[in-house]
Image (cartoon, rainbow over the protein chains, first blue to last red):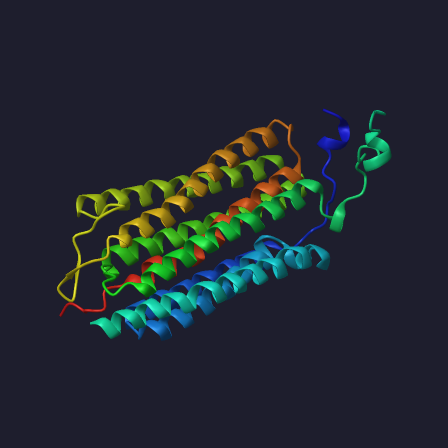
Length: 110
Length: 219
């Protein structure tokens, strides 16, 4: 193994222990809010919107701080996130109208 | 026919030295893998949402205690293991080998605890008659949709597979970094994978557990 493989390529301090503890604390708080929502037994569609919203905030925190995305070059973000969002939007557009159609068919026949 | 000169067509082998996006190539490779893996999980979760939305007899069997409480505990374990992983990466970059190895091992222990506790829950569900192809629940007098088990075990199983692979991966990284075979970049890249596994659970936990909490409060 050559020497350049042993030495780390970059050394930059990204975030402090205090920052990571705060992120962890807020992730736990958001999880607590999610469980509280389940305990309140809200309407399913209200629940779904709130849970997806909270999960997106949590995943953004994880990607930005734990995965260091906030400290990377913007180019890395630009090749990863927009393409993912685009794919997900396309899947949502093609899939969900159909499942709603099937539910409507069932209500007509019942 | 003249022999094709690969170098003339494709250029000589890339000799390295230029890090795209100032991320090392291992890191970029891991990010691209995670992009494709997130699409795998997204389509699995969307398929689950599709069959659930299209079903008129989808059971909501989970009580706050024990099912939701157990899953919340699993979430706390995973989040805490992510914290120890991020501290391991920071220690590795500061060249504190012993500290970094300790944090990586703590992370792997968290992952192993997650798998063991989750498997325990699986076996409790099997004992209650919930399998990947059947369940004993009834919804408005109709038998509950058997796809409940299929999607539950499919999603949580795919995630559990990722956690198990992550635990093995972290053990290899801890050994290699401790023996100075690997550098801080290897630790950071394994951290990316681990945080991703944590991130996926942040969607599976609300979608599979919290959305399936029993709406009939026992009085």
